[in-house]
Image 1 (cartoon, one colour):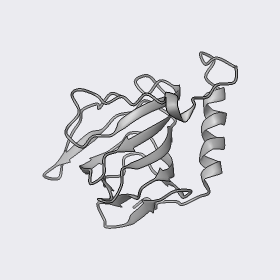
Image 2 (image 1 turned 180 degrees about the vertical axis):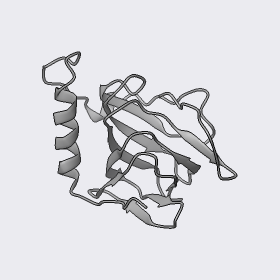
Image 3 (image 1 turned 120 degrees about the horizontal axis):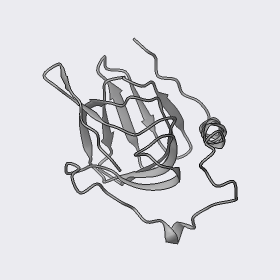
Length: 158
């Protein structure tokens, strides 16, 4: 089974920036968003408890991207997998990711992690506060639900 790899949050940002720099469709100019200007979006077809997203760069419906992702406190995403590796840095709250074999990591403020693509896992935000992570994926975002040990593929577009 693939291992979860913990690493320093700066590595996530550097890896994301390097990969996105290869995207010739990206504007090559400084960019940023002030905290008060963040606009959270939630897919209207997403299940209750689904995260909201603020895309920082790229386009998660088409390819590589970096985004802030906010989970409501107590959110509990069922067993699922993502096609691409998911790199994340904890910004607020405690987000716990548990693989189907019982290994888990908790992303808290300042901690980072990587979940290999196609790793079946659940995602839970603590009950005490909403969870916010800075996430980077090298390809299109998708979410494939796992039901009764069978995989039902379906995109969760953000």
